[in-house]
Image (cartoon, rainbow, N blue to C red; front, side):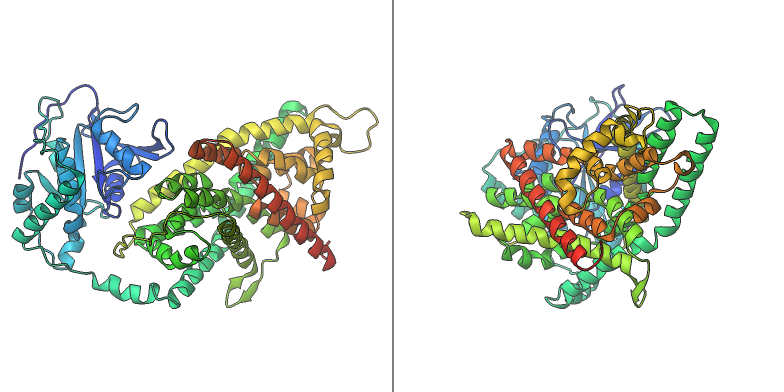
Length: 632
């Protein structure tokens, strides 16, 4: 095995992790850094950037950067360009890596070795990490590590990214290394050739290495093949996909009931306790009605969001999500989009912003713009608190059949409505816009099935919880306090007979907006709550909590929002609001992301206009039908 000798220097060394998608790169990153990692965006662009720390001892640590997965260093998409720029030292605000870890899938060296040769061509110090070595052995793939190291003229270590001590070999290598510029052994740069000849040369080199290591035979995973016979079946596959999604939404309600009840009780106890300790006045009103009522009204839905992401992470870690893209490729093609649009749309279920960013992988301009326009119709996690509040308040908690709950079924229908709406809009745009570029079939690697890593899932849930709580403590808190001020001032005049909030700025503005929204069944409280809801969807729950808390009497100031709206709203109004949020205009951060991605205001304006019109139309039809059926 080749040796790498480096001396430590004051500035922390930077190690970049490079690998093909599905090579286990992120799992190994989580194993090395644990909870000592942060997620941000690269400077100037909205591509996710993961950085962590690996401590050599109590004082010294190494910065580890998890770069976006790539198949080659010939960038065609933005995330591939980011990886290349970081390796070349051209990324804004980031130095050139001191060392590169090439993470390879030991079960598929034929594809992975080409990336090693590309990194070697750049002349960067490099260590090759054979990940998933346990799976390779189970499939009868015996890799001579020393011989592979000699063939590549690079140090090679093995790892198992999903096991607790699967990075032991790499840790031992780090502990024996001295990180200094003088000790860094740069690789000899290969001769510059045309891209085509490089690819041909790399193919010959990889073929030669595999043949000399007796690894030139392709060994398939029998378990993945057996599962794919059913999960990718043209008829059974889509049915199983719908069943999986349906069960996920059932679990969102059934599993979350206990922790949600505990959070509600804690919020009410805290509001009552603080209210008793503080004297009556604006400070008490701000803390109890503004901060506690607003934040508590949103935090209560954290269990449901974590349960939803728990299942998403399991499907992603197990290798099933790319199969879902394959199953829906034909459906996407029927509405004028390629299968490449599926992954951005799938990402939009978490948040529309990463979904819109992911459209950068779509080379066809028309397909990219259409995908951006319909991405907001995918039900993002910010809508979940609104759905959960209205469903729990107005839909009976009863079983339909074999343990299937009515509330979970309604939630599934809402998600499905967004998907159907997106497909209809895409089909309409297909009829009125031309696609001059030839449609290319979806080419996507299907990774082998494997058990999800518990640690990776826990880290993913922790990061999602932190992001959610940061929104509660940041944007949401500022908007809630601002709304409390509007709802509290000016005070009611002497001899006023109505609740004081109706004389406030919020009351006046809400009544003005109510004239616009009255045809779809919205009262002035809902109308005023829609304004801060433009900043972030979940804020509407906080806004309603604040409005009704300020409007209430001292005796019921800490009362939960759910029984208030179930008593004061009609079922027709609740159904209308649900329909509104299926299609409602996006939050301001999403509109800003669309502006950045498209470079003009035309597409954001089109998005806002058609979503508002669609939401108003859907709410109007829903409300009027509900009234006809006697639900008003």
